[in-house]
Length: 152
Image 1 (cartoon, rainbow, N blue to C red):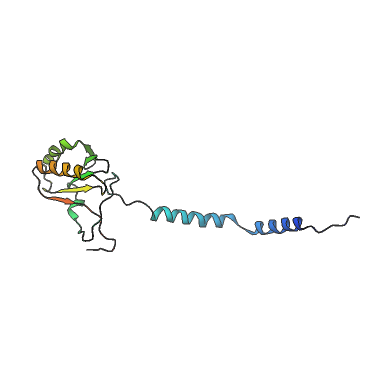
Image 2 (image 1 turned 135 degrees about the horizontal axis):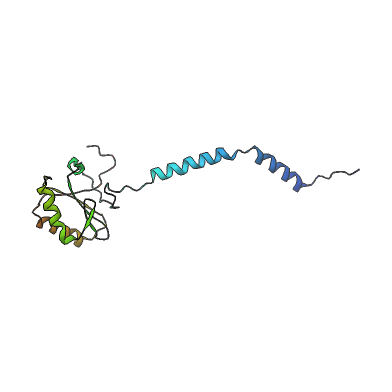
């Protein structure tokens, strides 16, 4: 007859396997998935609607400009690296006046909505403003991010 000797390592192994068998991994995986999904949804970057990845400057007294959402609004985008877009089309800076003239001759409002990246160089912004002025438009609206609590 063989007698069983109690050993701490065997007792620990039995106790550990009993606790692990009680743990349901699907519940833990579900909770983990929920928190990852919430993180991805809430931490999405806030880029402009045109999809060019422009981070707008922020202003305390920003006002909504519903005209910028019109389908025929003249929107010029200046990215951080100096690329210029007329609407969704990338254009050389020197050709911008032609695109703007064509747009307002087709019935658009004689106002340009400029979405300049907050980190764009001043010289590039000035060059774009000069080209807008060369097109005969003096009314330029700089698009900015307002404070999160502003509802006006």
